[in-house]
Length: 217
Image (cartoon, rainbow, N blue to C red; front, side, top):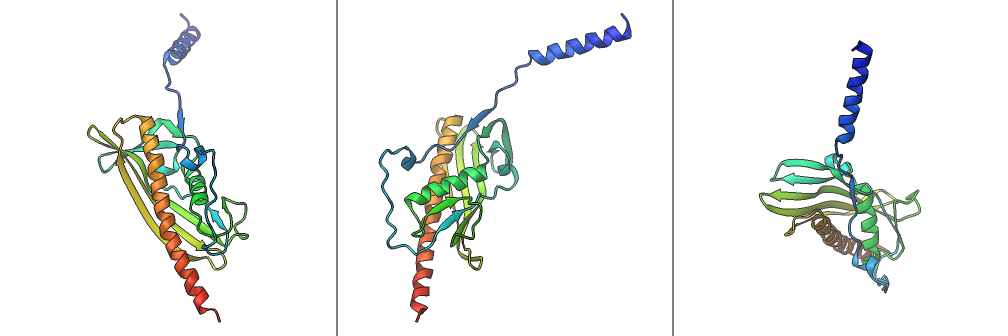
């Protein structure tokens, strides 16, 4: 066999071996819809007792592994990694921003509308900014949990001042331990965390609004 034929035979063998391998397909997931999204009856949230203004929701900051598409998991307390074939269908920071904007329809902070990631924020009185601190599956032995830990702040656009900031965390077990159960657990934990943040922000913005009105001549 000539050297040329030997090279061709090697290439053919390599291609055949490559084709015989089974590459796992990419699985893509989104947070499950909220109760309001699945309901056929829309109930407008009361806004008469809220401060005036409008709110822009920014994409959440997703540091480290959270900025990648793979779903993050943790083994014990320090073994972090992400699935190579299980991904979020859209970037996590965008998905959480949209989720927050949806939940603000149920629990608004100001009388005006809420919009996710507008082209410009100058037309809005406030901006909601969030950061992911935890958003993962946790494996402790044979037990599976999910954890969601978010930080957020409410910014006044006029002077770029922080009116409120806070954080909230939820961890809960996933008895079935399947990826579907993990996504469902992350979805419900996200709603619980965001609602806790919104409730805390609402108390603060009402107090600041009342104090500002009291100081007016």
